[in-house]
Length: 624
Image: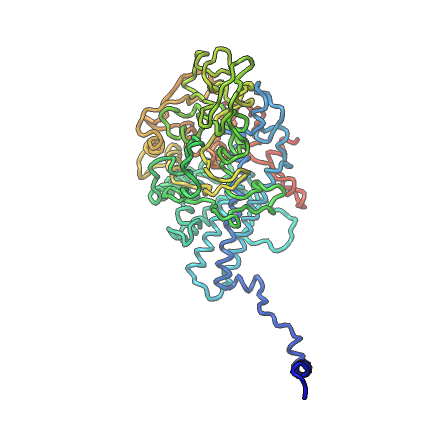
């Protein structure tokens, strides 16, 4: 009789034989079926995007690149009357040691990286829009109204980019079909044809777009109307006689501005538009969870979030992405850093990183009434606080050390119209000073010699977009970047009326203009140096609340106060034919600007790829 162990061994052998026989049977009976690959899905882009779900996914792809586009701010902020690049602060005698692009110096050529970066981004976005428009007719079984809406969104996005491009470069290529193959023949289209196409597309988009988007952040009817107001206003000025503009364009601009005003009410306070924060970082009561970028005034914005995977910019678009860290980079780009002040631990989120890419010119502060205009208090940091203890700090050689505590003021920037005269009212870093903190008058903004309290060239931070609680670095902001808001519509309407439009819902240009001023000042009397004397010595003032029809310069001053840093300034000055005049008067580092600078050079990278001449006419004259 076999033992139990022997029986188990024999059973295992029998099982192994049965398994082998089973496999042989399977392979002999169905070998062809087993070896034949059965693809679960072999969808191509054509087949996927022709489905309703695929087309809907495609429609989302036209929005993320907007983040990269709005972060290209060198060409729209610097070199104007209110912003200069960091090189502007390198020399206390206002003699530039580096000709950065924002000074219109020798470095601004067709090989300038910022020029080619913006070009590439705009045309990539235009092509994405064209892809969606071209594929719309092939969608099978989709809702016709929804498809028409998505096409309208794409036409809006294409128009936005073409509008930026035609203002920067003048006559440009205008592709209205998706690029599917290489083509080295570049056809530049006359600016007047570009504007006509913009109006055609945006008018169609206005009809098809809903008043409220299905997903917040998509283009709406009001976004198309707002862009139409900008386009008509700009065409009406008819730059160089080449835009096809007429006086009727101003009436159209007013009409579309009124439509935006009717559907997007102003928020009560200017500060309600921006992240909530305390100016004393040692008493910060707000954080990312307190922020909400959505309000009635916003017409269209580039979307950000608290999710890192969706909050990044695309880093493969250009050689050097504008923001490597992802997120909204607005909080850290404007000048007036605090890393070198006593009581600053350096790289922390208390003040975050301040790169000083865009620095307010000395004249900019003088556009405001610092005491009565709430925008001044919101936009600029007037006092800097220590965020850690700094015992035994020596204000100046031979001065008794002082113990600085966290929460103590270490820098005070005096309002331009309220300087301190007596040495006793100054800091201990100067002879006769008695204050435990440095006191900097306006005429020293950006040109003051180095002090123990601060590094050279210190000026107030432009803190309009600052977010509390975001990580230290080159981005990480979660607040949306506003592209259009209804406050601008009021100023568009005022400008259009000054240029001859009539029939506005609020009547006079004065009424539109003062609506924006009064929100900021609460009905108080306001006065500022409207000449914005860069020398910083005159205290002569004038009211900027209109008592009659505002001038174009008054409107430009108000656009500077209200829309500071929102990516519009270069376009505003070029449109109104004021760029050269105001930049020279208010920006001490703009010395070489010429007429040909009113258009940017076609990027060298584009010229190199083309088989025909595509250079901008103005720059051909310059190179000769």
